[in-house]
Image: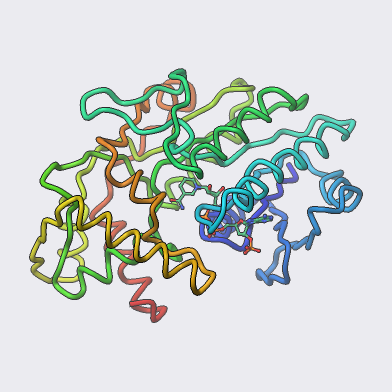
Length: 319
Ligand SMILES: NC(=O)c1ccc[n+]([C@@H]2O[C@H](COP(=O)([O-])OP(=O)(O)OC[C@H]3O[C@@H](n4cnc5c(N)ncnc54)[C@H](OP(=O)(O)O)[C@@H]3O)[C@@H](O)[C@H]2O)c1
């Protein structure tokens, strides 16, 4: 089976590449700038050139459309990256005469937050609260309405692991012996390690009976931020002092960081869109569909995977 991955040089894409390689597939990396991955075919694409895109996809059996933008300084840039690019991929694969399956890497953000007691199901109506979530929900809509080839949508929850720059901030804070929580309310969320996500995608690839299904992907456990911090502190062998930041103060800090991002023209991890997501009541998903249809039942391994992530940050000089 010939598989290609868009955004193959990013955090998730590069892990998908190596994981598929380890499972004896020969994945093709689709990227928009020079990229080297040992022993792999790399296709550099100008996505605005539809002829070049069609040619790059023409000999494939499966495209994992993983490229996407998770933060940006303006809506239009994010919509172009997440909706516009998906539209181009769908249009290109619709013109291919043989069956070519599409797996779209969406996000839990497309569905929206949950309450603390009721995890969201895939069948719930989409209620995204951020521009990012809206762009991912609209990209899903493009696929449902326009894709004439077999497809699946994977809504991953928060992903952590080697090469991730978002959770790195939490590790950096912990390294200083601190952790912060916005407001007194403990919020529950789902998470998945990037290697578990790659495994999830493998479960999906080898299943041919789930055409057009959307799946939430998590490690099937619910966590509070305090729990995650505890695992990080344990990996670092540090004691952490938790600071409860009042919501109004946190909003101010996110607003300042957002403004700084606009000044230096680089979106920051702490931005006002992220603030909306972080302060939602909970981010819980019901993983029963993946368990039943994909036999997705990972062992709970967060402490060990956090330790592994920490070691990666250290040995690669990120911490
Ligand atoms: N990280 C998470 O917690 C999380 C959670 C749920 C879902 N996801 C989804 O997972 C996917 C990968 O995210 P990530 O965390 O790996 O992000 P990442 O490290 O920023 O990688 C994003 C990749 O997408 C490519 N890309 C971005 N905009 C593009 C555009 N306009 N045209 C072509 N390529 C473009 C980037 O290419 P360049 O390097 O050339 O910019 C890069 O290869 C995204 O679709 C994201 O929505 C992520």
